Image (cartoon, rainbow, N blue to C red):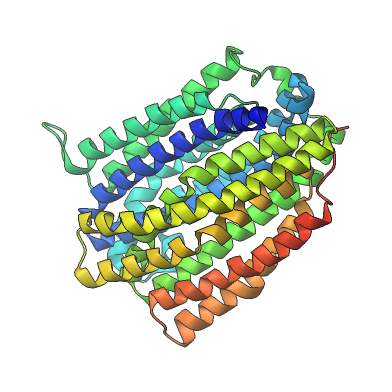
Length: 443
């Protein structure tokens, strides 16, 4: 039990600190943009919703690769880890190219899907073009961070994230509001600050990989295409990528429904999501720890220990989720007062945060169970089917009816949205109990 505790703390604490720094500084950024008014919040929120789809696609690719990385790490097979990362980068860079074109060439058309507000579209277009260049950088950095965490070097992404997010926050302050001879640039300045931070992050990760300072490294050999290996990798990665893409698309549909309910509801969702992210601070660490502590044991064929680790991590997740749910409800009372919005919108945000706070145990169980347990054993098809059915078969139809047909309030729509999580949890408990995820996929 001591070894279990030591390992989970060594992985989860650095990732939790990184998430806390990221969420805190993102909140500061959000507050800075919030000083520009509801329209600016809505514009940046819609562009970030498009970026969110790419991030989820990249997360899906890295999670698929993480199945192999974690099990190869259990065997300490560093050459196969390198080959895995080289092949998955082909996929993520292809996706980054598509999103670069969407954000740089067609931002107005994309934003018109969400809203007819011309000022939101104008500001969103202004914000989108610099962000477009960060798509390639973010994809590489995402893969590197995942790999370093999986080989139990979680402190390195923590330090890099601290540097990048600090650059972003300082850059936002200077470029949004102006300083000395530097003019105020508004949302365009926020976008430029984001790009500069991503450039810094990319080059630090690249330096670490090329200098071979950790088990995660890149040589030309890593990018030599191996057809049979790529097909085996994609057998498990494709359902995860497809899953995350459809999930992010579904969440975007949620945002689309709320955008059609009114510009103020876009702003309310953006603010409440920023506050809710504090609830994910700990669970990013727990999910990553689960990938390592379950996947590495499966790679060693130590199936009994893998089951034990999974059970303990689920128990820890649910207990912690209750505390974090109450925490974000409490914090929201203070955070929402910092926004330059009217009292009616503040009241809506506070009510929404209560709903998502109370739902944290179910949401976090789903996150750790699907990402950390089922995927670690290569049970990616079942995980995909559960998520797609819950979201597209249950959540989206209910939210569309509640928001667009019945014209319910935003808090009521959020309550309906949580039905999806409940259905997913029921299916997830059943699937985990079957034990079909307990397998070695790299031998």
